Each structure stands twice: as C-alpha cells, then as structure tokens.
Length: 486
Image (cartoon, rainbow, N blue to C red; front, side, top):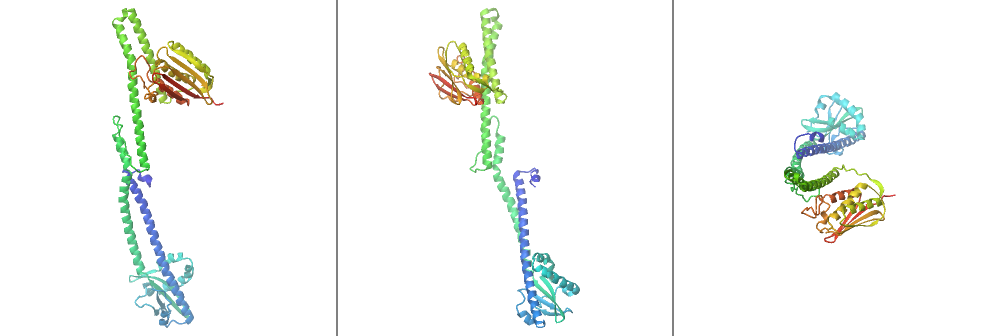
C-alpha cells in the first residue's frame, strides 16, 4: 500500500494521513465486524438454548402424562422459557395448544405442511448434532429466523408420537427486540466509524504538519543558504527526537561547510599573496633589464640572481601546494619501510651544518632505532622543524638536535635559541599559511605551509608533535615516532 501511496505527487503529510486513515479504517471495520458477529452469536445462541430447553421440558411432560389436551396445565408448569411461544398441531394440522393466540402461525406453517413435515424430520435428525457443537447453531441461525407480519421469530420444530397420535411441536421465540438492537448497533457502528475516520483525517493532517514542521524549516533554511550567507542555522527545539537530531546534524554540517569554505577562501587569498610577491619581483627585474640593464653587467647579474632566487621560491611554494592538494585528495602515496634512524639523523645534521653556516649546530645524541615509516617524509618533517629554527634564530644562535630510543617510541628533539613563539600563536602554527610574522617579511622567509605538511606527515605515521616555546628564549619541538614492533 505504501509503495503505491508514495508515488503520488502530494505532500508527505497527506500521504501519511492517507496511510494512517486506511489502516484505521481496516481496524474499525474488523472491530465492528467482530463486535456484530459476537453479539449475533450470543443472541442466537441464547434463543437456541431457550428453545432447546423448552422442547425438552414439553416433550418430557407429554411423554410422562401421555396427553396434550390440558393446555392450561402444560402452560402453568413453567416448562417454557421466558418469551418462548408453543404451538402444538395434530396430524390434520389442527391447533391443539397455543400459548399465545395473538401470534399468528408462520406463513410457511399455514401454506406448506408437507414441507414442514420434512423439516420436522430433518430437524429431529440434526437437532441432536447441534446440541453439542454450537457452530451448528450459528450455521442454522439465519435459516431458523422467520418473519411473520413484520414480527421476527426464532423457531424450532419437533414431532413426537403419543398414544398413536403424531404431534407436531412448533416453538418460537420473538426476536423483534434483538433485531432492533442489531439494527441500532449497525447504525451506531457506522456513525462511530465515520466520525472516527473524520477525526482521524483532521487530527492526522494537524499532527503530521506539526511533526514535519522541522523538515520544512530545514528546507527553507537550505533554500536561504548561499555562499555569502552561510551563517543561517535551523532553530532547535526542546524535543529530543529524530527531527531534532536531524536539525542538529544539519547545523553541524553547515558549521563544517562554513569552516571549510573560510579555510578555502583564506587559502586562496594567502596563496595569491605568496605567489604575487615573487612574480612582482621577477616582473620588476625583467622590466629593469629590458630598459637599461642589458648594457650594465652588474645590474644584469643582479637581475639574473634575483629572478633565479624568486623562481626557486616560487617552485618551492608550488611544490608545497601540490603536496597539500594531494593530501586533501588522499592521493599522496607513502612508501613505508623498516629502516634504522641513525644514518637519517646524521644526514640531516650534516645538511643543516651546510645550509646554516652562521649558526651553531649541535648533534647532542643519536641513538639508533628501527622504525617503519616513509624515510623521505620523516626526513622532510624533521627538516621543516630545523628550517624554522634557522629562520627564527638570529645569526650565531644555537640549534641542537637529539635523537634517542625510548621504550615504545623514537624521540627527536629540535631546540633553538631563537625569537620564540607567542603563547596566543602556538595553537595556530600548524594551520596553512599561518605565520607568526604577520608582515611576511623576507627576513624570516617561509610561506606558512611547512608546519601543515609536517602535521600531516606526523598524522600518517601515528606520530605526536609537542611544541614548547617562550618568546625571546627559544623553541623546542619534540617528535615521537612509534618503534617498529618485533
């Protein structure tokens, strides 16, 4: 049923109302049918029992006295159940006893005596079968209900032999009141069912509209949301139901979309700023060389060196951007292998001494350890921390590297004596394009992407990064990489 209803092009509240109304209609019809059938069974069973008991009493009396001419005695013996009417006929269909002369004989009795005789015989044979299973009573109930001048009777017939005479007993019980009761019951059930369905339809539409109101609110909010209006949210109600959870989830989704969009917008803005600087420098030197620098060897050399430097910076920035783009798309491939860290740390130390001759580089400790990781990425992550220490440590400053093997992880510590990081900036240094030096001066260099890359590499290796920094005293970065399990 629901598969057909849901194909209709109408609001879901109407569809739910139709479904619930159809289910309620079936329930009401079934209940009404069972109620009517139960009462019908009770009424006809009671009438059948009264007639059966009256037949037994009258038959027993006639067989015991062997006479039927004294109708007064028969009627005064209280052999008939309340409301039962007795008519006794002889073989010539002469009425011998009539307990109620106001009730005429049924038309079938007056017009077709031969059929009655067959009914007497058949009823006598089947009456005994009906005494035990009451289902027989219900099966024959409607056939035993007769209409005489609009007076409904429930009847039974029996024949007995007394002193060689064949007597026909015809017992009837008026069913007019019961018939009126059943008619009124049917009418009342019909009215009740119709009123119930009307109330169900009205209340169903009202309740479904209230229940589905949060969904409409979600729809309206979704229509109003645009790129320039991501602050729109769905008001939450106090009801802790599925629709409340849906609205809360939708708001949470909007929060994440807004956060992602703001990050993307900031990313594009910062990337444009970082790319604008080298392009401006390259364009400026190219214009200078084109105007008058071609004939000046010193200006020509200066321009070439500046263009090459900015090209290298731009290349490095593009490489970092491409790396982060691959990580966002889960396309960055890691080649994890088992290797010993001693040679890696020594190589990083030697390279640092070469690129930072103005700083004091110290390798305090280099304990070997076996880790399962991408060696190139681990080296890139450690070099990012060391390069930051070089950029933010004045010439002559000290940078120390220490590597040691602990119980469950390999720990690398990079410590410098540089300018440090203010406390309010420390939670944000791993965000893309975030730089403590808001001026983005060429003195400190950098693009603000290195620590973002380092954070991703650490996450892919289940590595933790602990940063401790004090302004004007220096920064300490502790990297802990899990050891390879045996």
